[in-house]
Length: 154
Picture 1 (tube, rainbow, N blue to C red):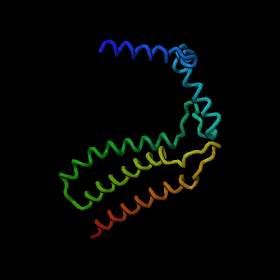
Picture 2 (cartoon, one colour):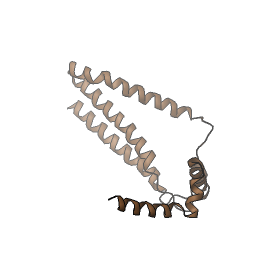
Picture 3 (cartoon, rainbow, N blue to C red):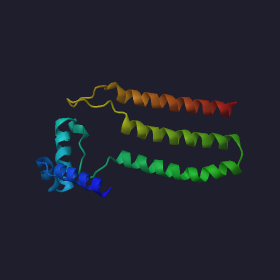
Picture 4 (cartoon, one colour):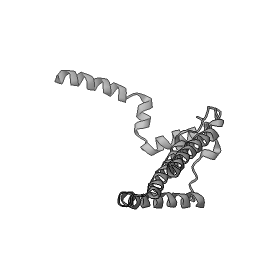
């Protein structure tokens, strides 16, 4: 077993002494990453997707985030109250709270992960995906709210 470990280590030494690896070994890791990420940003993506280092966020985004957090925190109080107060209006409020909370969560997922896959030229291959994702989200939310309201009326 020891002999096989020694043989394996000799192969690793030969691998580690290759010229391209030696140059990368003596550089700090962030320098390597920044060089590659700067190349990718300038060559392949559109300029509007570049991170803004000023640290300023849009006021609407910050206020929406605060409202979402307050709403999620208020759901902690609403859920036990729904068990204590059994009434159709309370059930409607809890169901609506879940639908709105799910809408905001899916909106974040759709915005972050469904964006039309940029091509090598910097343009989006499927520009219609950006608007289609929101249409699908609003159809789901509207259908859920309509079903929730129909349960309240019946």
